[in-house]
Length: 315
Length: 287
Image (cartoon, rainbow over all chains, first blue to last red):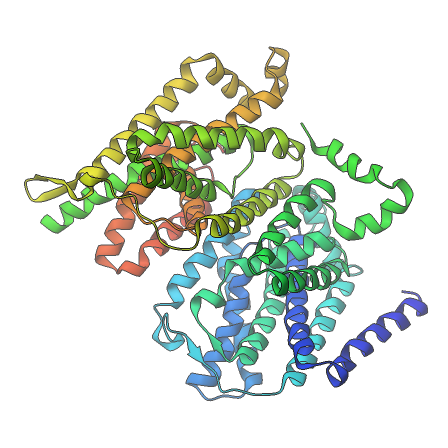
């Protein structure tokens, strides 16, 4: 990384960190939501973008993180930090047990199995008394949006640094090798099972932390919203739109799509959801490798870039 | 014991409907290698077509089935020809995502067009039932079951015997060889997707007669269809019948003996178990 880029990155983080001191309440709230979505997209990037396993189950980690915080704070009267750790432990445990079983599956099978995990978790949690069954839990309120904003920003920086580390570590190369050719990676001596489970757990760790922060911020959660599958859709769309398997792509995707969707939902309700669907359909046809790839190629080849994408995949 | 028999019959009747729901998904998956995550949303559309035919034009839901199947067929043909053919050779993840995008679009359009209210199709004979010893058999559910089984077996014969059916099976086995024998793949893919959606349309019409419909039923129906396809395998429509009946019975028994909220846990739990233990399906060869 050149010093110029490093300075630029630090400047962007500094501006983002200063935002709550001169932005309105509305901006801060929008900021927390967007930052947490960006964390989720980055988390998904680890398993979906780098390892090539399209997980539809990351919302389970998010839900476990939320419930970890809620159960620790409401039922056991422990501090927020302990709750976060508890939530992360739940998520990692989940990734290492069920995740390890599901990660043996490939392609469609993995995607649908993880989709089913979310549904099962919703049903199971709504029957657990400790988790408030289907009524949910109400957390003690903390009116400090600035704190939540800075926490979310810190988490996003941490997630991005982790991904940066992935791109130049042995572990990260192993994951990319698995994405490109799993049998080949195994032949080259990559312990594929261990690597996949670790990637899933790492991805789950960030999702769980985001879920925990969100739960304490919103101060309420129920099984339906905690394990909401549409959240998983959002993180995938944002990562894919920005550029899966890149360091900054998911962040750019999350920021730009959140801004557009916020604008649309303030104009016409309902339109925001529709917009996500149209974006994903259009993006898959025209730019399957995301904004990051557009930035690299469109200046060179212009509009032909989109036609080449279509020509490469059509029947 | 009477209760057990009743629940068993309910499960079997439900299972027939499940089989038709899954049949379209399995067909598209087996031939085009696209797992259509919008399948449940298309079933939902079929249900609304039936509902409008019944409330608007007073067409009996069972007579309306061919119409809703035809409407969905046209939609499916157009979608495959205009959109999905563009990405059909892309990596699996892309086709998966694009159908997911379609599901989101359809759900929101449905919410705008039909509102989020629950609808039911209630023909005058909806409350009728037959008494067979200790077991009550609701007429509508039985009719839905019969239609479902006829459709599934009809699909099987169609694939085995007709020219189009053979072309579809040939394409599923080897696209290049089928092409050499004069199959036009763009048209054939569109026909197959159209047929898959026609089955979804019919399944939706049947679903509307036995259950409530709203714009959000798609996701669960997709997951159930997927579970059934996995259990039954993709080779043979008869496997899908077995998968549907199995899931219907297990779900009904779970709701009775463990608790009504555990119905979905049972079906998705089975899906996970089958996937992990036997990824090629309980009955299937390979998927």
